Image (cartoon, rainbow, N blue to C red; front, side, top):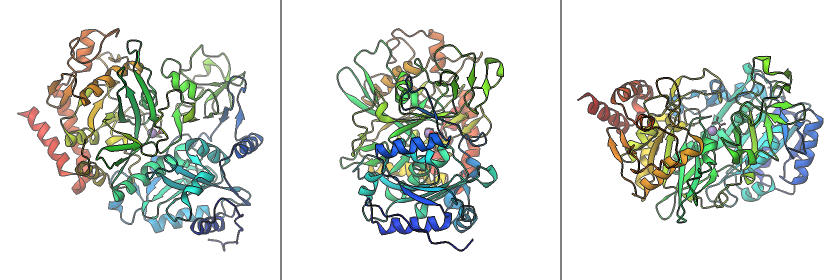
Length: 599
Ligand code: OXD
Ligand code: MN
Protein backbone atom coordinates (compact mmCIF):
# COMPACT_ATOMS: atom_id res chain seq x y z
CA UNK A 1 0.00 0.00 0.00
CA UNK A 2 1.12 3.58 -0.63
CA UNK A 3 2.44 5.61 2.32
CA UNK A 4 -0.64 7.09 3.93
CA UNK A 5 -0.97 10.79 3.69
CA UNK A 6 -2.32 12.38 6.88
CA UNK A 7 -5.82 13.67 6.44
CA UNK A 8 -7.44 16.10 8.83
CA UNK A 9 -10.76 14.83 10.10
CA UNK A 10 -13.00 17.90 10.40
CA UNK A 11 -14.14 18.79 13.90
CA UNK A 12 -17.74 18.24 14.76
CA UNK A 13 -19.70 19.35 17.75
CA UNK A 14 -21.67 16.10 17.47
CA UNK A 15 -19.01 13.81 18.95
CA UNK A 16 -15.63 13.65 20.57
CA UNK A 17 -15.71 9.84 20.67
CA UNK A 18 -12.00 8.94 20.49
CA UNK A 19 -12.63 5.44 19.08
CA UNK A 20 -14.76 6.80 16.29
CA UNK A 21 -12.37 9.63 15.48
CA UNK A 22 -9.43 7.27 15.38
CA UNK A 23 -11.20 4.90 13.01
CA UNK A 24 -12.29 7.71 10.71
CA UNK A 25 -8.73 9.00 10.64
CA UNK A 26 -7.44 5.54 9.76
CA UNK A 27 -10.06 5.02 7.05
CA UNK A 28 -9.39 8.45 5.58
CA UNK A 29 -5.68 7.72 5.45
CA UNK A 30 -6.46 4.53 3.60
CA UNK A 31 -9.01 5.92 1.14
CA UNK A 32 -7.54 9.43 0.71
CA UNK A 33 -10.75 11.40 0.11
CA UNK A 34 -10.58 15.06 -0.83
CA UNK A 35 -12.93 15.96 1.97
CA UNK A 36 -14.83 14.41 4.85
CA UNK A 37 -18.44 15.30 5.64
CA UNK A 38 -20.19 14.33 8.88
CA UNK A 39 -23.87 13.57 8.36
CA UNK A 40 -26.14 15.05 10.99
CA UNK A 41 -29.49 13.78 9.67
CA UNK A 42 -31.05 17.27 9.47
CA UNK A 43 -33.63 18.44 6.92
CA UNK A 44 -31.19 21.08 5.75
CA UNK A 45 -28.64 18.37 5.04
CA UNK A 46 -31.19 16.31 3.13
CA UNK A 47 -32.02 19.30 0.92
CA UNK A 48 -28.33 20.04 0.33
CA UNK A 49 -27.46 16.41 -0.51
CA UNK A 50 -30.47 16.08 -2.79
CA UNK A 51 -29.52 19.19 -4.71
CA UNK A 52 -25.96 18.01 -5.08
CA UNK A 53 -27.07 14.54 -6.23
CA UNK A 54 -29.36 16.19 -8.80
CA UNK A 55 -26.58 18.47 -10.01
CA UNK A 56 -24.26 15.49 -10.40
CA UNK A 57 -26.88 13.38 -12.22
CA UNK A 58 -26.91 10.76 -9.44
CA UNK A 59 -30.59 11.49 -8.90
CA UNK A 60 -33.16 12.46 -11.48
CA UNK A 61 -36.07 14.58 -10.36
CA UNK A 62 -39.45 12.93 -10.86
CA UNK A 63 -42.66 14.87 -11.41
CA UNK A 64 -42.79 16.84 -8.15
CA UNK A 65 -46.43 17.73 -8.51
CA UNK A 66 -47.53 14.13 -8.65
CA UNK A 67 -44.63 12.55 -6.76
CA UNK A 68 -43.44 15.13 -4.23
CA UNK A 69 -39.99 14.48 -2.84
CA UNK A 70 -39.46 11.50 -5.17
CA UNK A 71 -36.32 10.89 -7.20
CA UNK A 72 -34.96 8.27 -9.54
CA UNK A 73 -31.53 6.70 -9.42
CA UNK A 74 -30.15 4.49 -12.19
CA UNK A 75 -27.48 2.07 -11.10
CA UNK A 76 -24.85 0.59 -13.34
CA UNK A 77 -26.51 -2.26 -15.29
CA UNK A 78 -23.89 -4.67 -13.91
CA UNK A 79 -24.88 -3.73 -10.37
CA UNK A 80 -28.58 -4.33 -9.82
CA UNK A 81 -28.87 -6.98 -7.10
CA UNK A 82 -27.12 -8.55 -4.17
CA UNK A 83 -24.10 -10.59 -5.17
CA UNK A 84 -24.01 -13.70 -3.05
CA UNK A 85 -20.94 -15.10 -4.79
CA UNK A 86 -19.01 -11.94 -3.91
CA UNK A 87 -20.24 -11.79 -0.30
CA UNK A 88 -17.83 -13.17 2.29
CA UNK A 89 -17.89 -14.05 5.96
CA UNK A 90 -14.35 -13.49 7.16
CA UNK A 91 -14.11 -15.48 10.36
CA UNK A 92 -10.90 -16.89 11.85
CA UNK A 93 -11.75 -20.38 10.57
CA UNK A 94 -13.70 -21.60 7.55
CA UNK A 95 -15.82 -23.73 9.84
CA UNK A 96 -17.03 -20.62 11.72
CA UNK A 97 -18.50 -19.34 8.45
CA UNK A 98 -19.85 -22.78 7.61
CA UNK A 99 -20.69 -24.54 4.37
CA UNK A 100 -23.41 -22.14 3.19
CA UNK A 101 -21.22 -19.02 3.19
CA UNK A 102 -18.26 -17.91 1.13
CA UNK A 103 -15.32 -17.63 3.47
CA UNK A 104 -12.19 -15.57 3.30
CA UNK A 105 -9.43 -15.49 5.88
CA UNK A 106 -9.72 -12.12 7.68
CA UNK A 107 -6.07 -11.18 7.15
CA UNK A 108 -6.33 -12.03 3.48
CA UNK A 109 -9.57 -10.04 3.14
CA UNK A 110 -8.19 -6.99 4.93
CA UNK A 111 -5.14 -7.14 2.71
CA UNK A 112 -6.87 -7.86 -0.59
CA UNK A 113 -9.78 -5.47 -0.20
CA UNK A 114 -7.53 -2.99 1.62
CA UNK A 115 -5.52 -2.73 -1.59
CA UNK A 116 -8.70 -1.77 -3.43
CA UNK A 117 -9.63 0.82 -0.79
CA UNK A 118 -6.12 2.28 -0.95
CA UNK A 119 -6.50 5.74 -2.45
CA UNK A 120 -9.97 4.83 -3.73
CA UNK A 121 -11.63 8.07 -2.64
CA UNK A 122 -9.10 10.43 -4.24
CA UNK A 123 -11.02 13.31 -5.73
CA UNK A 124 -14.14 12.21 -3.88
CA UNK A 125 -16.00 13.07 -0.68
CA UNK A 126 -16.08 10.72 2.29
CA UNK A 127 -19.41 10.82 4.08
CA UNK A 128 -19.52 9.68 7.70
CA UNK A 129 -22.98 8.27 8.34
CA UNK A 130 -23.73 7.42 11.99
CA UNK A 131 -26.94 5.44 12.45
CA UNK A 132 -29.02 3.48 14.92
CA UNK A 133 -30.51 0.12 14.05
CA UNK A 134 -33.59 -0.06 16.27
CA UNK A 135 -35.75 2.47 18.07
CA UNK A 136 -33.99 5.43 19.66
CA UNK A 137 -33.08 4.61 23.27
CA UNK A 138 -33.88 0.91 22.98
CA UNK A 139 -31.57 -1.40 24.96
CA UNK A 140 -31.81 -3.73 21.93
CA UNK A 141 -30.66 -1.18 19.35
CA UNK A 142 -27.16 -1.20 17.89
CA UNK A 143 -25.09 1.68 16.56
CA UNK A 144 -23.32 1.58 13.25
CA UNK A 145 -21.22 4.12 11.42
CA UNK A 146 -20.92 3.81 7.67
CA UNK A 147 -18.15 5.58 5.85
CA UNK A 148 -19.07 5.92 2.19
CA UNK A 149 -18.13 7.89 -0.89
CA UNK A 150 -21.71 7.74 -2.17
CA UNK A 151 -24.20 10.51 -1.60
CA UNK A 152 -26.90 8.06 -2.77
CA UNK A 153 -25.96 5.83 0.17
CA UNK A 154 -26.07 8.76 2.59
CA UNK A 155 -29.54 9.75 1.33
CA UNK A 156 -30.81 6.17 1.50
CA UNK A 157 -29.38 5.54 4.96
CA UNK A 158 -31.25 8.59 6.15
CA UNK A 159 -34.49 6.87 5.15
CA UNK A 160 -33.60 3.35 6.24
CA UNK A 161 -32.18 4.14 9.70
CA UNK A 162 -32.31 6.68 12.49
CA UNK A 163 -29.37 8.57 11.10
CA UNK A 164 -27.08 11.43 12.19
CA UNK A 165 -26.73 13.31 15.45
CA UNK A 166 -29.21 11.08 17.26
CA UNK A 167 -26.94 8.07 16.70
CA UNK A 168 -23.84 9.85 17.95
CA UNK A 169 -25.74 10.93 21.04
CA UNK A 170 -26.76 7.35 21.72
CA UNK A 171 -23.21 6.14 21.10
CA UNK A 172 -21.56 8.64 23.47
CA UNK A 173 -17.94 7.66 24.07
CA UNK A 174 -18.51 3.96 23.61
CA UNK A 175 -16.35 1.78 21.40
CA UNK A 176 -19.35 -0.49 20.76
CA UNK A 177 -20.35 0.36 17.20
CA UNK A 178 -20.26 -1.38 13.85
CA UNK A 179 -17.56 -0.08 11.56
CA UNK A 180 -18.76 -0.09 7.96
CA UNK A 181 -16.52 1.06 5.13
CA UNK A 182 -17.95 1.44 1.65
CA UNK A 183 -16.43 2.69 -1.56
CA UNK A 184 -18.21 2.60 -4.90
CA UNK A 185 -14.94 2.08 -6.75
CA UNK A 186 -15.25 1.58 -10.46
CA UNK A 187 -18.27 -0.80 -10.26
CA UNK A 188 -16.27 -3.60 -11.74
CA UNK A 189 -17.73 -7.00 -10.80
CA UNK A 190 -14.17 -8.35 -10.72
CA UNK A 191 -13.29 -5.81 -8.06
CA UNK A 192 -16.43 -6.19 -5.95
CA UNK A 193 -16.36 -7.60 -2.42
CA UNK A 194 -18.84 -7.50 0.43
CA UNK A 195 -16.85 -8.68 3.44
CA UNK A 196 -18.09 -9.21 6.99
CA UNK A 197 -15.80 -9.54 9.99
CA UNK A 198 -18.12 -10.55 12.86
CA UNK A 199 -15.29 -10.79 15.40
CA UNK A 200 -14.38 -7.14 14.70
CA UNK A 201 -17.97 -5.92 14.22
CA UNK A 202 -16.76 -4.62 10.86
CA UNK A 203 -18.05 -4.59 7.27
CA UNK A 204 -16.07 -3.73 4.14
CA UNK A 205 -18.01 -3.23 0.93
CA UNK A 206 -16.20 -2.34 -2.27
CA UNK A 207 -17.18 -1.93 -5.90
CA UNK A 208 -20.98 -1.77 -5.76
CA UNK A 209 -23.65 0.90 -5.45
CA UNK A 210 -26.65 -1.44 -5.12
CA UNK A 211 -28.65 -1.06 -1.88
CA UNK A 212 -28.43 -4.63 -0.61
CA UNK A 213 -24.62 -4.44 -0.92
CA UNK A 214 -24.07 -0.91 0.31
CA UNK A 215 -26.79 0.16 2.75
CA UNK A 216 -24.71 -1.55 5.37
CA UNK A 217 -27.24 -1.32 8.20
CA UNK A 218 -29.61 -3.69 6.43
CA UNK A 219 -28.47 -7.12 5.28
CA UNK A 220 -24.85 -6.69 6.39
CA UNK A 221 -25.32 -5.41 9.95
CA UNK A 222 -28.92 -6.23 10.86
CA UNK A 223 -28.66 -9.80 9.57
CA UNK A 224 -25.14 -11.12 8.93
CA UNK A 225 -23.27 -9.39 11.75
CA UNK A 226 -26.50 -9.23 13.81
CA UNK A 227 -27.04 -12.99 13.70
CA UNK A 228 -23.49 -13.54 14.99
CA UNK A 229 -24.01 -10.97 17.75
CA UNK A 230 -27.32 -12.67 18.60
CA UNK A 231 -25.60 -16.02 18.99
CA UNK A 232 -22.99 -14.49 21.32
CA UNK A 233 -25.46 -12.39 23.29
CA UNK A 234 -28.45 -14.78 23.44
CA UNK A 235 -30.91 -13.14 21.02
CA UNK A 236 -32.05 -13.63 17.44
CA UNK A 237 -31.59 -11.54 14.29
CA UNK A 238 -34.06 -12.82 11.71
CA UNK A 239 -35.12 -12.10 8.14
CA UNK A 240 -38.70 -11.60 9.29
CA UNK A 241 -41.44 -9.02 8.96
CA UNK A 242 -43.33 -8.10 12.12
CA UNK A 243 -47.03 -7.30 12.09
CA UNK A 244 -49.76 -6.71 14.62
CA UNK A 245 -53.24 -8.07 13.92
CA UNK A 246 -56.14 -6.72 15.94
CA UNK A 247 -59.56 -8.39 15.99
CA UNK A 248 -62.89 -6.58 16.43
CA UNK A 249 -62.70 -7.27 20.18
CA UNK A 250 -59.52 -5.18 20.30
CA UNK A 251 -57.15 -8.07 20.99
CA UNK A 252 -53.78 -7.56 19.23
CA UNK A 253 -51.51 -10.48 18.40
CA UNK A 254 -48.03 -10.04 17.00
CA UNK A 255 -46.71 -12.26 14.26
CA UNK A 256 -43.31 -12.44 12.61
CA UNK A 257 -42.80 -14.06 9.21
CA UNK A 258 -39.77 -15.21 7.25
CA UNK A 259 -40.03 -15.26 3.47
CA UNK A 260 -37.20 -15.44 0.96
CA UNK A 261 -36.70 -12.29 -1.11
CA UNK A 262 -39.54 -11.26 -3.44
CA UNK A 263 -42.21 -13.63 -2.08
CA UNK A 264 -44.77 -10.98 -1.15
CA UNK A 265 -43.32 -10.19 2.26
CA UNK A 266 -43.90 -6.44 2.01
CA UNK A 267 -47.48 -7.07 0.83
CA UNK A 268 -48.12 -9.34 3.81
CA UNK A 269 -46.60 -6.83 6.25
CA UNK A 270 -49.08 -4.17 5.00
CA UNK A 271 -52.04 -6.42 4.28
CA UNK A 272 -55.48 -4.84 3.97
CA UNK A 273 -58.15 -7.23 5.31
CA UNK A 274 -60.91 -8.05 2.79
CA UNK A 275 -64.41 -6.57 3.14
CA UNK A 276 -65.67 -9.42 5.27
CA UNK A 277 -63.17 -8.45 7.96
CA UNK A 278 -64.87 -5.34 9.32
CA UNK A 279 -63.29 -4.27 12.55
CA UNK A 280 -60.02 -6.13 11.92
CA UNK A 281 -56.74 -4.27 11.57
CA UNK A 282 -53.30 -5.32 10.37
CA UNK A 283 -50.45 -2.96 11.24
CA UNK A 284 -46.79 -3.06 10.23
CA UNK A 285 -44.03 -3.07 12.80
CA UNK A 286 -41.38 -4.11 10.26
CA UNK A 287 -41.30 -5.39 6.68
CA UNK A 288 -37.99 -7.25 6.51
CA UNK A 289 -35.99 -7.80 9.69
CA UNK A 290 -36.79 -8.69 13.31
CA UNK A 291 -34.43 -8.60 16.26
CA UNK A 292 -35.87 -10.71 19.06
CA UNK A 293 -34.94 -10.83 22.74
CA UNK A 294 -36.40 -12.65 25.71
CA UNK A 295 -38.12 -10.09 27.92
CA UNK A 296 -38.25 -10.00 31.71
CA UNK A 297 -41.61 -11.76 31.60
CA UNK A 298 -40.08 -14.65 29.63
CA UNK A 299 -41.84 -13.78 26.38
CA UNK A 300 -40.01 -13.15 23.13
CA UNK A 301 -40.05 -9.47 22.07
CA UNK A 302 -39.33 -8.19 18.56
CA UNK A 303 -38.07 -4.82 17.35
CA UNK A 304 -37.70 -3.69 13.77
CA UNK A 305 -34.13 -2.39 13.49
CA UNK A 306 -34.99 -0.36 10.37
CA UNK A 307 -36.80 2.95 9.88
CA UNK A 308 -37.67 2.58 6.20
CA UNK A 309 -38.53 0.10 3.49
CA UNK A 310 -36.27 -1.00 0.66
CA UNK A 311 -38.86 -2.89 -1.33
CA UNK A 312 -39.23 -4.46 -4.75
CA UNK A 313 -41.23 -2.14 -7.01
CA UNK A 314 -42.55 -4.29 -9.90
CA UNK A 315 -45.94 -5.76 -9.13
CA UNK A 316 -46.75 -3.06 -6.58
CA UNK A 317 -50.13 -1.50 -7.36
CA UNK A 318 -53.35 -0.41 -5.72
CA UNK A 319 -54.68 -3.94 -5.75
CA UNK A 320 -51.59 -5.84 -4.57
CA UNK A 321 -50.57 -3.31 -1.95
CA UNK A 322 -52.37 0.03 -1.62
CA UNK A 323 -50.42 0.79 1.56
CA UNK A 324 -47.11 0.38 -0.24
CA UNK A 325 -48.44 2.69 -2.96
CA UNK A 326 -49.15 5.27 -0.27
CA UNK A 327 -45.67 4.74 1.21
CA UNK A 328 -43.97 5.45 -2.12
CA UNK A 329 -46.17 8.35 -3.18
CA UNK A 330 -43.78 10.89 -1.65
CA UNK A 331 -40.25 11.28 -0.27
CA UNK A 332 -39.11 8.10 -1.98
CA UNK A 333 -35.96 7.19 -3.87
CA UNK A 334 -36.71 4.86 -6.78
CA UNK A 335 -33.84 2.81 -8.13
CA UNK A 336 -33.93 1.34 -11.65
CA UNK A 337 -37.59 1.93 -12.48
CA UNK A 338 -38.68 3.37 -15.83
CA UNK A 339 -39.88 6.95 -16.31
CA UNK A 340 -42.81 8.33 -18.29
CA UNK A 341 -42.59 11.33 -20.59
CA UNK A 342 -44.26 13.27 -17.80
CA UNK A 343 -41.53 12.39 -15.29
CA UNK A 344 -43.53 9.79 -13.40
CA UNK A 345 -41.96 6.53 -12.24
CA UNK A 346 -43.26 3.45 -14.04
CA UNK A 347 -42.86 -0.28 -13.59
CA UNK A 348 -44.36 -3.55 -14.79
CA UNK A 349 -47.51 -4.29 -12.82
CA UNK A 350 -48.29 -0.64 -12.05
CA UNK A 351 -51.96 0.41 -12.21
CA UNK A 352 -53.27 1.75 -15.49
CA UNK A 353 -52.41 1.12 -19.12
CA UNK A 354 -48.86 0.55 -20.29
CA UNK A 355 -47.58 3.88 -21.68
CA UNK A 356 -46.75 4.09 -25.37
CA UNK A 357 -43.37 5.61 -24.63
CA UNK A 358 -41.05 5.40 -21.67
CA UNK A 359 -37.44 5.87 -20.71
CA UNK A 360 -36.38 2.45 -19.45
CA UNK A 361 -34.37 1.75 -16.29
CA UNK A 362 -31.13 2.17 -18.21
CA UNK A 363 -32.17 5.56 -19.58
CA UNK A 364 -33.00 4.36 -23.10
CA UNK A 365 -36.19 5.06 -25.06
CA UNK A 366 -38.69 2.22 -24.64
CA UNK A 367 -41.97 1.19 -26.28
CA UNK A 368 -44.19 -1.83 -25.59
CA UNK A 369 -42.51 -3.46 -28.61
CA UNK A 370 -39.04 -3.17 -27.14
CA UNK A 371 -39.21 -6.78 -25.99
CA UNK A 372 -37.55 -6.01 -22.66
CA UNK A 373 -38.83 -4.96 -19.27
CA UNK A 374 -38.97 -1.20 -18.85
CA UNK A 375 -38.20 -1.37 -15.13
CA UNK A 376 -35.59 -3.77 -13.81
CA UNK A 377 -37.31 -6.79 -12.13
CA UNK A 378 -35.37 -5.97 -8.97
CA UNK A 379 -36.00 -2.23 -9.12
CA UNK A 380 -36.50 -0.84 -5.65
CA UNK A 381 -38.10 1.88 -3.59
CA UNK A 382 -36.58 3.40 -0.48
CA UNK A 383 -39.41 4.93 1.54
CA UNK A 384 -39.65 6.09 5.14
CA UNK A 385 -41.82 3.85 7.32
CA UNK A 386 -43.55 6.97 8.63
CA UNK A 387 -45.27 7.14 5.19
CA UNK A 388 -47.03 3.85 5.90
CA UNK A 389 -50.75 4.45 6.60
CA UNK A 390 -50.83 1.25 8.67
CA UNK A 391 -47.63 1.76 10.63
CA UNK A 392 -48.04 0.16 14.05
CA UNK A 393 -47.96 2.63 16.94
CA UNK A 394 -45.48 0.15 18.47
CA UNK A 395 -42.94 0.52 15.64
CA UNK A 396 -40.87 3.01 17.62
CA UNK A 397 -41.40 1.38 21.00
CA UNK A 398 -37.99 0.65 22.56
CA UNK A 399 -39.31 -2.53 24.22
CA UNK A 400 -40.62 -4.09 21.01
CA UNK A 401 -43.71 -6.26 20.69
CA UNK A 402 -44.40 -9.70 22.23
CA UNK A 403 -44.36 -12.39 19.54
CA UNK A 404 -47.31 -14.82 19.50
CA UNK A 405 -46.60 -16.65 16.25
CA UNK A 406 -43.83 -17.04 13.72
CA UNK A 407 -44.40 -17.99 10.11
CA UNK A 408 -42.06 -19.55 7.57
CA UNK A 409 -43.16 -19.12 3.98
CA UNK A 410 -41.73 -20.10 0.65
CA UNK A 411 -42.73 -20.06 -2.98
CA UNK A 412 -43.67 -23.65 -3.80
CA UNK A 413 -45.76 -25.01 -6.66
CA UNK A 414 -46.54 -28.16 -4.71
CA UNK A 415 -45.94 -30.09 -1.45
CA UNK A 416 -46.36 -27.29 1.09
CA UNK A 417 -50.00 -26.60 1.99
CA UNK A 418 -51.52 -23.16 2.37
CA UNK A 419 -50.79 -23.27 6.09
CA UNK A 420 -49.43 -25.84 8.49
CA UNK A 421 -48.92 -25.52 12.25
CA UNK A 422 -45.97 -27.31 13.78
CA UNK A 423 -46.50 -29.77 16.61
CA UNK A 424 -43.97 -28.04 18.85
CA UNK A 425 -40.90 -25.74 18.80
CA UNK A 426 -38.43 -28.38 17.59
CA UNK A 427 -40.75 -29.50 14.81
CA UNK A 428 -41.32 -25.84 13.87
CA UNK A 429 -37.58 -25.18 13.78
CA UNK A 430 -37.29 -28.25 11.52
CA UNK A 431 -39.93 -26.84 9.17
CA UNK A 432 -38.18 -23.47 9.08
CA UNK A 433 -34.74 -25.04 8.70
CA UNK A 434 -35.77 -27.13 5.71
CA UNK A 435 -37.81 -24.40 4.03
CA UNK A 436 -37.41 -24.45 0.27
CA UNK A 437 -38.30 -21.76 -2.21
CA UNK A 438 -38.12 -21.11 -5.90
CA UNK A 439 -35.52 -18.41 -6.56
CA UNK A 440 -36.42 -14.86 -7.72
CA UNK A 441 -34.72 -11.81 -9.18
CA UNK A 442 -33.62 -10.29 -5.85
CA UNK A 443 -30.22 -11.93 -6.19
CA UNK A 444 -28.20 -12.65 -9.27
CA UNK A 445 -28.38 -16.25 -10.47
CA UNK A 446 -30.85 -18.67 -11.98
CA UNK A 447 -34.56 -17.93 -11.43
CA UNK A 448 -37.23 -20.52 -10.56
CA UNK A 449 -35.21 -23.37 -9.08
CA UNK A 450 -35.99 -24.66 -5.58
CA UNK A 451 -33.28 -23.94 -3.12
CA UNK A 452 -33.23 -24.73 0.59
CA UNK A 453 -33.37 -21.45 2.39
CA UNK A 454 -33.37 -22.10 6.15
CA UNK A 455 -35.52 -19.46 7.86
CA UNK A 456 -35.02 -17.38 4.65
CA UNK A 457 -31.54 -16.74 6.05
CA UNK A 458 -29.40 -18.60 3.53
CA UNK A 459 -27.79 -15.43 2.13
CA UNK A 460 -27.89 -13.62 5.47
CA UNK A 461 -26.62 -15.94 8.21
CA UNK A 462 -23.31 -14.57 9.44
CA UNK A 463 -21.94 -17.82 10.85
CA UNK A 464 -22.15 -21.57 10.55
CA UNK A 465 -25.68 -22.54 9.50
CA UNK A 466 -25.58 -25.65 11.72
CA UNK A 467 -24.73 -23.53 14.78
CA UNK A 468 -27.41 -21.06 13.77
CA UNK A 469 -30.08 -23.77 13.73
CA UNK A 470 -28.82 -25.05 17.07
CA UNK A 471 -29.15 -21.49 18.40
CA UNK A 472 -32.81 -21.54 17.36
CA UNK A 473 -33.29 -24.80 19.27
CA UNK A 474 -31.40 -23.46 22.30
CA UNK A 475 -33.53 -20.31 22.53
CA UNK A 476 -36.41 -22.47 23.77
CA UNK A 477 -34.83 -22.92 27.19
CA UNK A 478 -35.04 -19.19 27.96
CA UNK A 479 -38.56 -18.52 26.65
CA UNK A 480 -41.45 -19.11 29.04
CA UNK A 481 -44.30 -18.56 26.58
CA UNK A 482 -43.28 -20.05 23.27
CA UNK A 483 -44.48 -18.41 20.07
CA UNK A 484 -46.34 -20.96 17.93
CA UNK A 485 -44.62 -21.85 14.64
CA UNK A 486 -46.33 -22.10 11.24
CA UNK A 487 -45.47 -22.68 7.60
CA UNK A 488 -47.39 -21.01 4.76
CA UNK A 489 -47.39 -21.20 0.96
CA UNK A 490 -49.41 -18.71 -1.08
CA UNK A 491 -48.04 -20.10 -4.35
CA UNK A 492 -49.40 -23.62 -4.66
CA UNK A 493 -50.55 -24.47 -8.18
CA UNK A 494 -52.84 -27.03 -9.77
CA UNK A 495 -51.69 -29.42 -12.50
CA UNK A 496 -52.26 -26.73 -15.13
CA UNK A 497 -50.00 -24.27 -13.34
CA UNK A 498 -52.90 -22.14 -12.04
CA UNK A 499 -52.53 -20.64 -8.57
CA UNK A 500 -54.94 -22.30 -6.14
CA UNK A 501 -55.12 -19.48 -3.63
CA UNK A 502 -55.92 -15.84 -4.49
CA UNK A 503 -53.28 -14.46 -2.08
CA UNK A 504 -52.84 -10.74 -1.27
CA UNK A 505 -55.62 -9.47 1.06
CA UNK A 506 -57.17 -12.93 1.20
CA UNK A 507 -54.13 -14.09 3.15
CA UNK A 508 -55.96 -12.43 6.05
CA UNK A 509 -57.99 -15.63 6.30
CA UNK A 510 -54.83 -17.59 6.97
CA UNK A 511 -53.63 -14.97 9.41
CA UNK A 512 -56.90 -15.20 11.30
CA UNK A 513 -56.58 -18.99 11.43
CA UNK A 514 -53.05 -18.63 12.79
CA UNK A 515 -54.12 -16.18 15.47
CA UNK A 516 -57.04 -18.40 16.40
CA UNK A 517 -54.71 -21.38 16.68
CA UNK A 518 -52.40 -19.35 18.92
CA UNK A 519 -55.30 -18.69 21.23
CA UNK A 520 -56.59 -22.27 20.95
CA UNK A 521 -59.85 -21.21 19.31
CA UNK A 522 -60.25 -23.33 16.16
CA UNK A 523 -60.29 -27.04 15.49
CA UNK A 524 -57.71 -28.50 13.17
CA UNK A 525 -56.80 -31.60 11.24
CA UNK A 526 -53.71 -33.50 12.23
CA UNK A 527 -51.54 -34.78 9.41
CA UNK A 528 -48.23 -36.59 9.58
CA UNK A 529 -46.44 -33.29 9.04
CA UNK A 530 -48.38 -30.86 11.20
CA UNK A 531 -51.83 -29.41 11.78
CA UNK A 532 -53.75 -27.96 8.83
CA UNK A 533 -57.14 -26.26 8.55
CA UNK A 534 -60.14 -28.48 7.96
CA UNK A 535 -61.28 -27.65 4.45
CA UNK A 536 -64.98 -27.92 5.28
CA UNK A 537 -66.98 -24.70 5.51
CA UNK A 538 -67.24 -23.41 9.07
CA UNK A 539 -64.37 -25.56 10.31
CA UNK A 540 -61.85 -22.86 11.04
CA UNK A 541 -60.85 -21.04 7.85
CA UNK A 542 -63.22 -18.18 7.23
CA UNK A 543 -64.44 -18.66 3.64
CA UNK A 544 -67.16 -16.02 3.57
CA UNK A 545 -67.16 -14.16 0.26
CA UNK A 546 -64.17 -16.11 -1.08
CA UNK A 547 -64.28 -17.29 -4.67
CA UNK A 548 -62.75 -20.71 -4.28
CA UNK A 549 -64.20 -24.12 -5.10
CA UNK A 550 -64.28 -26.92 -2.50
CA UNK A 551 -61.90 -28.91 -4.73
CA UNK A 552 -59.43 -26.02 -4.91
CA UNK A 553 -59.57 -25.59 -1.16
CA UNK A 554 -59.08 -29.28 -0.54
CA UNK A 555 -56.09 -29.23 -2.88
CA UNK A 556 -54.47 -26.11 -1.46
CA UNK A 557 -54.70 -27.43 2.12
CA UNK A 558 -53.71 -30.98 1.19
CA UNK A 559 -50.69 -32.80 2.48
CA UNK A 560 -49.64 -35.55 0.12
CA UNK A 561 -47.38 -38.22 1.60
CA UNK A 562 -45.77 -38.96 -1.78
CA UNK A 563 -44.78 -35.30 -2.25
CA UNK A 564 -43.48 -35.15 1.31
CA UNK A 565 -41.49 -38.30 0.78
CA UNK A 566 -39.51 -36.65 -2.02
CA UNK A 567 -39.32 -33.44 0.00
CA UNK A 568 -37.83 -35.22 3.01
CA UNK A 569 -35.52 -37.24 0.80
CA UNK A 570 -34.25 -34.13 -0.94
CA UNK A 571 -33.46 -32.59 2.46
CA UNK A 572 -30.75 -35.17 2.91
CA UNK A 573 -28.26 -33.15 0.85
CA UNK A 574 -28.94 -30.13 3.01
CA UNK A 575 -28.23 -31.98 6.25
CA UNK A 576 -25.21 -33.67 4.72
CA UNK A 577 -23.91 -30.24 3.78
CA UNK A 578 -24.10 -29.20 7.44
CA UNK A 579 -22.01 -32.25 8.36
CA UNK A 580 -21.30 -32.69 12.05
CA UNK A 581 -22.90 -29.31 12.76
CA UNK A 582 -26.34 -30.55 11.69
CA UNK A 583 -28.36 -30.40 14.93
CA UNK A 584 -29.29 -33.91 15.98
CA UNK A 585 -32.76 -32.80 17.03
CA UNK A 586 -33.40 -31.85 13.41
CA UNK A 587 -31.91 -34.88 11.70
CA UNK A 588 -33.95 -37.03 14.07
CA UNK A 589 -37.10 -35.11 13.11
CA UNK A 590 -36.44 -35.90 9.50
CA UNK A 591 -35.86 -39.60 10.17
CA UNK A 592 -38.98 -39.73 12.31
CA UNK A 593 -41.16 -38.16 9.62
CA UNK A 594 -39.68 -40.36 6.91
CA UNK A 595 -40.23 -43.48 8.98
CA UNK A 596 -43.86 -42.49 9.47
CA UNK A 597 -44.44 -42.41 5.71
CA UNK A 598 -42.41 -45.43 4.89
CA UNK A 599 -43.98 -47.73 7.49
C1 OXD B 1 -34.30 -7.72 0.43
C2 OXD B 1 -33.92 -9.10 0.14
O1 OXD B 1 -33.86 -6.81 -0.29
O2 OXD B 1 -34.28 -9.97 0.94
O3 OXD B 1 -35.01 -7.51 1.42
O4 OXD B 1 -33.24 -9.35 -0.86
MN1 MN C 1 -35.23 -9.14 2.69
